[in-house]
Amino acid sequence: MLALGTKVYNSHKLIGGGLSGSTQHDLVEKADGFAEVFPEHKYQVVEMLQQRGHLTAMTGDGVNDAPSLKKADCGIAVEGSSEAAQAAADIVFLAPGLSTIVFAIKTARQIFQRMKAYIQYRIALCLHLEIYLVTSMIIINETISAELIVFIALFADLATVAVAYDNAHSEQRPVEWQLPKIWVISVVLGIELALATWVVRGTLFLPNGGIVQRYGSIQHILFLEISLTENWLIFVTRGGSTFPAFTLVAAIAVVDALATVFTIFGWFSEEIGNEPVPNPMGGFYYNQNRQGMTDIVTVVVVWAYSIGVTIIIAVTYYLLNIIPSLANLGRAKRNVHDTQMENIIGHLSKLAIKHEKDEHGGNQYSLVGKSNDDADDD
Image 1 (cartoon, rainbow, N blue to C red):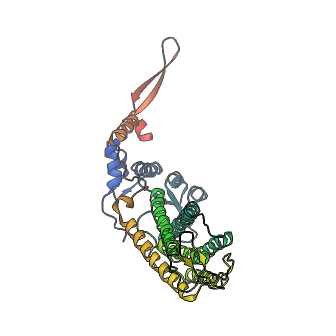
Image 2 (image 1 turned 45 degrees about the vertical axis):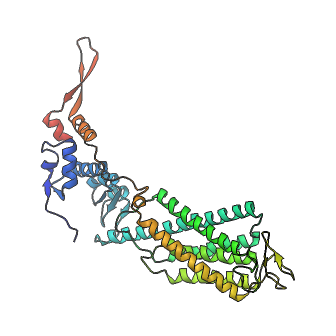
Image 3 (image 1 turned 90 degrees about the vertical axis):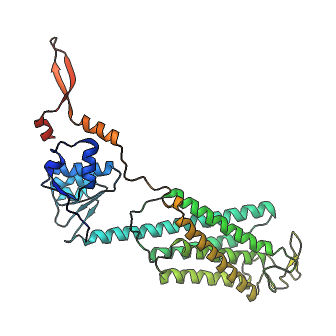
């Protein structure tokens, strides 16, 4: 089940077989196991694997395992282990069996998946608002009211709190923070969201009202489009390997319903009047005697448009994740193989500093080769 091979060597092959430097590292890397080892051999195996760039885990139960448990990237003290082993380990088992290792790895990777989805979501969300609000103030001297901005942020926070209870998948390979990749994906998604909001705003410059079917409020139409696309963005960044949890779906459904009600009834709207209000670039948006309200047909159109935007965002996210040049962007380089340095360190390990007194009683130091007894002691 573990796919272990039959290349198992004894400690003599590892230490006393005349191997050193790169040759010794190759043996450790390619071996399936070592038998009849002492505590120092365990430590050396862990150290050599780490020098080759591998993530190394170690299980143990005794005092003699403590150094290698501490050295490993993940030290695991099994049930009934000594206090020294437990103190040196990262994980301590309280019940017999090793199946908990698999459960711990899967759980950790699921937590990581939730965190990565949330971070990508938050970066893209912030860029969306920042890009649109800044450009709208510069280009057309217009912005969304502060009250609606507060509700956009509040709705986003209320919806994404439920991501902690979402169903998450665990990757087959070790995961790590690929920050350059996360930034690239988040920036692209944020720019696309800002462009989508500008498309909605651009239609409102048309003489026929654009996206407005009967009457509507510019503030609330933009508020609804931003709220819907940002709330649904979490479904994109979480990935499609698992179905979203009911808690997450319910939370987003509630805030989307509230955003829709805000738009229909014109709550917190500053656009109140009895006459069509002219757009800065020509045309009108119609809100006749409705006090900032928006008709239901327009709301349905905004919902349909937001669904289309989310589909485009999902396709973009999928394509960005399968691009080969981005797959390992920011991932630490593994399988480091510096033959020259390994050989130098191997040769230095066979040397010792010899201290003698010269004929005048002074101290004299020199490099000499270790004797066989000294090498065995090391």
